[in-house]
Length: 324
Length: 250
Image 1 (cartoon, rainbow over the protein chains, first blue to last red):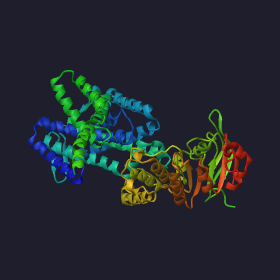
Image 2 (cartoon, rainbow over the protein chains, first blue to last red; image 1 turned 120 degrees about the vertical axis):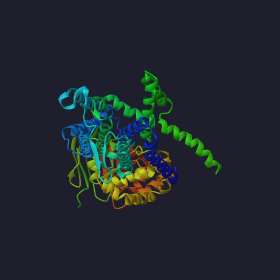
Image 3 (spheres, each protein chain N blue to C red; image 1 turned 30 degrees about the vertical axis):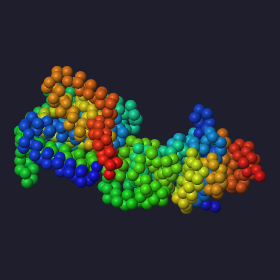
């Protein structure tokens, strides 16, 4: 795609996102906030699966760490500014990523995959059972009246949906840009080389485990940041935000969008949230329809929505080039 | 006499059966050394032992007097050894440029610190292009490595090895699968880019071996049966019997 087209698309998206809460209903503003948070989570997962080739099925663990650590900071430290509570949640995600990654990344393939699930379920069990700390199945709440104070912009309550939209949008976009930069640096190049040919990377003098730990913990940190945004958005913390179904949802978002393209997870999260919202309002057993859609996509379009888009674009652009 | 850059002492490798049997070998700094022998003699296994892919069962391997047996491959490579593979081993789904840049980033040992790497992106790109130019691969820099023709893939394979700027270069059958004209090009390339380096090459093409090597070692059934100059090897009866036959008989 030409640079001018790309810049045009970015400018259009920026305009759309800026104007959106001013014209959209509360329902759709709410939906787009959810999409932005899930897009951040899905992109953080892309760094693992799409970029480095690490199939984790426990990514909700880091999202959940962000959720609970931010929530606990907000509850137990009432004078702590909300952004600092988010920072605490994000850093806890980074630490969890480093600790769990250091243990699990020496495992390979299916052993790694299932141990990520095991760790995720351990954290879910803590969230579920440690009632005195996490509130158990009731979860945590009690910060909906908190204000976010920002220099220049002033103070806004978490109940102000328009403000919350812009707040989430700025952080989500910055996080996604950070992930994109991560993939574009020579380090990102090295990490995708790990996915392409691990043995060759090893014989280039690169410590593969250190490289994988770096991407794993960075990805966990971004997932935790998404979790801390989710806490502000939902105004509660629940074991549902750390369970294995959310981990699978993240995988599904990546696959629906196209997990080999950076844009894929973003598109996947848009499609996924829309599908869930609409299907669940019309069909009682909406999971069946979603499952069928997922299977069909895997069978016929394994490249996901981005793969379909690229196929169509090639069919249109190629004849035009030939004519030129 | 200079101490050897690489010293193998009584190196033995067992996989339930003995693959390398008590091999002792000195590689002198700056020499071009060829390792020859019939298929299954243990030549590639020896490379795998030197570079840490396999661990020795007995014996020691020293590089510049530092013991390297037991080290993982990435640590061995960081000491100044690089190897190519018998079966071409590239990042086949990535572009030629991305392949080479991975090696250039690895060479500079910038660690994994993003800020340091970010600051050097421009110089890394320039160095990558310079190396591709030396390999005559610059016009193909945006091509996916897996769709290059075989000779170009082989050149890139050697290029990835040399890009690390090692002191000791191990090339495993660089001429395998190439046409005679491609082989000539590759030999020329090897000469150019391994100048002032120590080279150990495994090769079955005797024209290449006798053209390149200062000394030749011969392995047979895991045992080192000779380590001599090319002229001496041609006359060595044990080598003739095990591998060369009457190839050099007038």
